[in-house]
Length: 472
Ligand SMILES: Cc1cc2nc3c(=O)[nH]c(=O)nc-3n(C[C@H](O)[C@H](O)[C@H](O)COP(=O)(O)OP(=O)(O)OC[C@H]3O[C@@H](n4cnc5c(N)ncnc54)[C@H](O)[C@@H]3O)c2cc1C
Image 1 (tube, rainbow, N blue to C red):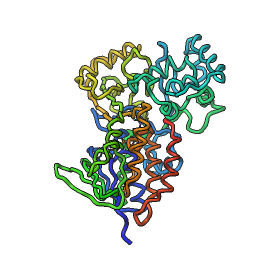
Image 2 (image 1 turned 180 degrees about the horizontal axis):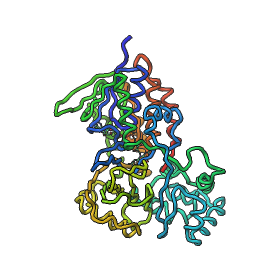
Image 3 (image 1 turned 90 degrees about the vertical axis):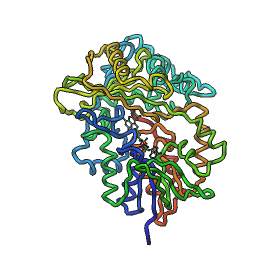
Image 4 (image 1 turned 30 degrees about the vertical axis):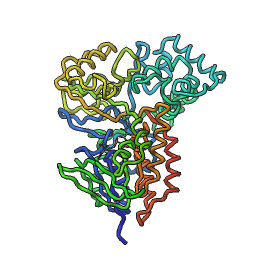
C-alpha cells in the first residue's frame, strides 16, 4: 500500500517536529515548506560575527514532555547542555535573582514590598472574583496588588502594548505560571535543595544555538526520506468544497503546486484563512483580520569584551525602561568563544506600525545602551557591530474579542477535510517550544495509515493543549 502524502506548512519546531515523527515512523511521504532559508521559525538561530544568535532569549524548559526530551537528548547527544538558570529582575530599582530564591527576596526587596506581598497573600481568601474577569482582575485576585502593580502589570503593558485590564483573563491563566501565592511559594521553595523538584532552576540549551533543535529535527526528517524545501513561501490553499486538495507556493521565483492526502499547517491561523482559494465566508475573513500579534525588535550588539555580565538574562518590567529583556548568549552555553568579544540581545516589544519599528540600527543600539545605563548596568561602549531582527508575529494578543474571533476561525478551519492547524501560530497560543513539539507529536499520531485523520484523538489532544502554561 502506498504511503499517504503529507505536506507540512512552516518549518518552526512544530513543523519540523511533525516532519521528523512522520518520516522516522515511515508513516507518510512528507514534504515541508518553509519560507525562510533557515529552519526554526521564532525558535531558530542565525550567524552574526562568529556567534550563533537566537531570536531573543530561548531555553528548553525541563517541563518538556519526557518522551520528547529523550528524543532530543538522543538527537543532540552531549550538545544538549543542562544548565543552571542565572538571571536577574530589575524591581523597584533593585536586582532580584531569577529564578526567585527565598534569601534573595528577603535581602533584595524593600521591606515595604515584602510586607505588602505578605498582606496580599494572607488576604487572598477575602478577595472576590470580578465579573467579567480580565488579565488584571485574575492576577490581582490571585497575587494581590503589590506584586501585580510593581511587576506583572507594567511588564504586561510593555510586552503586549495594552493596559492589563484590556487583556483577557485567559492570558493570565495561560501566560502566568505563578498566578497565586501557593504557586509562587512553590516556585520560590523549589530553589531550596530540600524541596527542589528535578529540573527546577535549570534549563536545556543546545551548544550552537537554540535553533539546533529544529535544524537537527529537520536533518533527522530528511535522513528518513522527508523533503524539506526552504525558501518556499506558501501563497495558496486550494479548496474543493470543504476539502483542501493542493497548496500553491513560490520557490526561487517559480510558482509550484503540491497535492496531498493531508496538510499540516503551522502558519498563523489568520494567514491560513486568508490563503484560501476560493476565499472563506466574509465573517471568517473579518474574524481573521481582527486577530492581532505583538511584534518584537531584537537588537544585537557585539561588544569588545570577553563577558558583559555573568548573568544569562536580565528582565526589565519597569515602565521607565523600554526594553523588556537582555540576554547574553555566551552565558547560555558557558562558552568562552569567540574570545575577546560577546554578544548582547535586547528585546523591544512594539507594534509593526510604531515609529520605532522602522528605526535605524544605530538609533536602536543607542536606545539599548541608554536603557542599560539607566538600569545601572555597565556601559557597553560603542558596539563593534549592530544587527536588528524584526519578528512580526512574536506574541498573540489576547483581547477579549480575540478569543471569540480565534474560536470562529478555528471552528471553520476545523471543518476542512485533509487540513489541520497547530503550532504556536496555528492555535494562536503563547506556547513554548516544548508545547509546539507536543502538538507535532500528537498530530503525527493522529494520521491514519490510509491518510485519514483520527478526529477523536485530535480533539482529545486539543483539550490537553488547553492546559499548556507558558514557562519563562
Ligand atoms: C522573544 C521570544 C522568546 C521566546 N523564548 C522561548 C523560550 O525561552 N523557550 C521556549 O520554549 N519558547 C520560547 N519562545 C516561543 C518559541 O519561539 C515558540 O514556541 C516556537 O517558535 C513555536 O514554534 P512553531 O513551529 O509553532 O511556530 P514558529 O516558530 O512561529 O514557526 C512557524 C513557521 O512558519 C513559517 N511560515 C509562516 N508563513 C509561511 C508561509 N507563507 N510559507 C511558508 N512558511 C511560512 C515561518 O517562517 C516559521 O518558520 C519564545 C518566543 C519569542 C517570540
